[in-house]
Amino acid sequence: MSQVLRGHAEDLYALELEELKKQDSGRRPANWQLTPQSVVTYLVGGTLSNGFEVSPKYIGNRRLMEIAVATLTTDRALLLYGLPGTAKSWVSEHLAAGISGDSTLIIQGTAGTSEEAIRYGWNYARLLAEGPSEKALVETPVARAMKDGKIARIEELTRIGADVQDTLITILSEKTLPVPELNTEIQAVRGFNIIATANNRDKGVNDLSSALKRRFNTVILPVPDSMEEEMDIVKRRVESFEKVMEVPAEPPALQEIRRIVTIFRELRSGVTIDGKTKLKTPSGTLSTAEAISVVNNGMAMAGYFGDGRLTAEDLAAGITGAILKDPVQDKVVWQEYLETVVKSREDWKDIYRACKNVL
Ligand SMILES: Nc1ncnc2c1ncn2[C@@H]1O[C@H](COP(=O)(O)OP(=O)(O)OP(=O)(O)O)[C@@H](O)[C@H]1O
Ligand SMILES: [Mg+2]
Figure 1 (cartoon, helix red, strand yellow):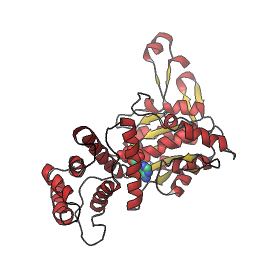
Figure 2 (figure 1 turned 120 degrees about the horizontal axis):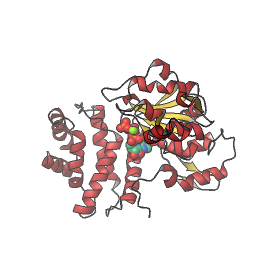
Figure 3 (figure 1 turned 60 degrees about the vertical axis):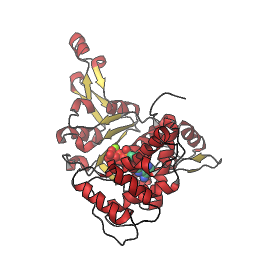
Figure 4 (figure 1 turned 180 degrees about the vertical axis):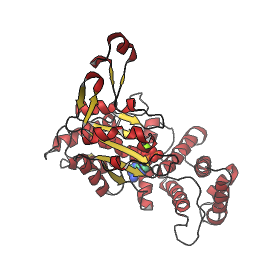
């Protein structure tokens, strides 16, 4: 088994991509590895004509994935927008893997991301020795994607300063990257496009200028609609975590996942599932991604410090940590929830006790 901690999508799912390619008969946009239909199948899963099962990566509305893929066939770029932990980065990675067979052309947006990180930089030793030359130029992932006709990914676009963001305007509208120092340009090859992600919860973000906004098609990824959907996501992600990390624990019982997801959904929405009790909501986002982490953490606890079976004790610290983002306010919210909801539920006594113990 490979020692890589986290493989790239195109490597982990190489077999699926290969099978999809084999049975793909429709028209492929230039430099796409798969047809748009097959990219969507790769994302949402399905059974191929030869019986091969493609696993779902994104669980949710298929239409959203169709819109995302269709956007990438046009001259507009794709912006995946939504709350933290709604699979924006995950979908972006798989879209790039499905379309270009390469999800690695990525730029992480931060407040410190400079224009050089998006356009091109210089190898200063070479620049000083030889003067500006093709060889002294340091290509960015965006420049490489343009040259190769691939998808470039920009994570957390709104964290990048507004002036730097606007570097993308020429790239997206003219599809070219001028290099005035060499009196040349890098012209984008067909198949090039950009997928950006941004979340709408962060403070201190830089809104996109309207000029840039116009060049993106925005797809909002929602929090999972139903309890069943969210449980399915948690279950699948935990299973794959267990496999990769080789945690010596049994897969979690569905019942345990249901309780975690219930707690998360109730606190997130401010009302119990039966609609009877109103609740205060904590300051954190309590996303599906955090529910996944709570269960993963619990599995590690059970595997290494328990008897290998996930119990409420193994989960308690994780749940508490996910909910108490603000040590004062959230503690009140959580305590109230424990006393009014958890305590009175049949079969939830173990969670009540375990969580009280770590508070
Ligand atoms: N609808 C979903 N289908 C499949 N997986 C999901 C879904 N929602 C969340 N996940 C899982 O949640 C995890 C976190 O998702 P991801 O990191 O992509 O979130 P994000 O939207 O990029 O968050 P952030 O804004 O914090 O960057 C992933 O492992 C992903 O598998
Ligand atoms: Mg992300």
